Length: 205
Image (cartoon, rainbow, N blue to C red; front, side):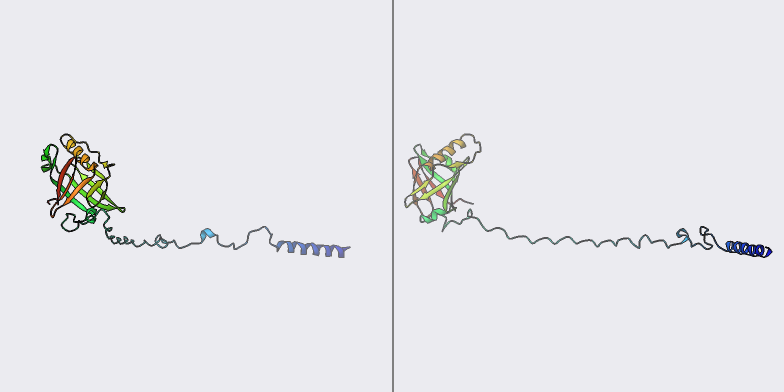
């Protein structure tokens, strides 16, 4: 019996010694790792990651100016001296009235208020215009061996004019509304019909 009690006491002593030498699983480690807060990092320079300033862009070079457009059909050069010598020469005229007569006699106002006679080729046809003492008449014209025939369906600018210029405009419109016989002289073109007869020459610059 005594021997059993001695063995039991020795076993209990061994178990107690083993329990004291074992560290509990929930206890903290003796040397915990340093927290991330205690670690020091070098501050990043404010200019280290700043983007480099871009180089100023040069303004694009100006495009070279284009050549002026070619002359249109409105630009023509009268043949010879400017007075027509043939039917074909009527395709380009730039003349002005210098004198004339009608049923009342000499047309005196032509000395102060002349009207023009201009033709040019446009879209394959001979265009006609006349700057009267008031508005400008515009139409087409056909020329034969003896006559200068303006299409009577003329267009006209719409500028308001007072008398006597408005009366002169009506006279010119009536003059060109009927076929005109023409006479070619070395320095003048004469047009005439029942309404009157007018001599045209190259305008004096």
